[in-house]
Image 1 (cartoon, rainbow, N blue to C red):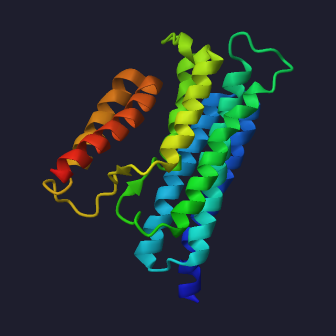
Image 2: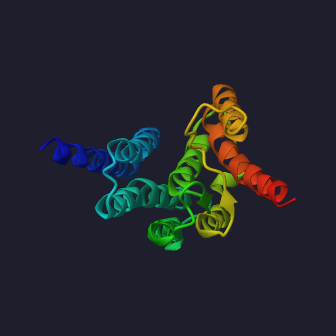
Amino acid sequence: MKLNIKSQVPNTITLLNLFCGCIAAVFAFKLAFEMAFLFVCLGIFLDFFDGFFARLFRVSSPLGLQLDSLADMVTSGFVPGLVMYFMMKFSSGMSESSYFPFLGFIITMGSCYRLANFNIDTRQTDSFIGLPTPANALFIISLQLVKTNNIYTVELFTNQWFLLLITLFSAYILNAEIPLFSLKIKNFSLLKYKLQVGFLLFSIIMLAFLYYLAVPIIIISYILLSVFHNKLQKK
């Protein structure tokens, strides 16, 4: 009986991730993007811990793997696509009857392809190939928050063609054959995980000073640092 209860703990956490994604979508439809961002962050937080408890209780299963991707499809796939749809819809010069904003859902399609591919790709156990969907979701939604906050004025974020470029880049980087280092720290070896620890400290400092603007900077830095690290490893 205890084993059955333990086996359901990770799946329950995964379903809570899905629940957060559904709430985030509702807030996005209401144009309450800060609340949408909050619930996406909460969903990503839960997404981390479902795997943690699955390993802790040794109850990993094919069902859990599929369930995790389905939950991520909403929280980290549909929601960022929806936010990009609204960013394009309210971009400069966009008419009410335009179909252009629907191109924002290219992000959702790219996320779907990545999640399906991730389930059958045996290379992504200790690191990632392509940008994980949670990081991409934070990147996209944070752009809307940077745009709507008076602290920063980023005119490019109101340009439909620039937004389309970001959308295409997002779909590409999700599925690109680019190895990205994992932020999971399995023990307290500073020497072994100096890259991860250094990056986490950099992220905390950026968030403390730049708030929402820090998020896209952190994600882009993560990609560039991984590419640079890969080149050093090859040497």
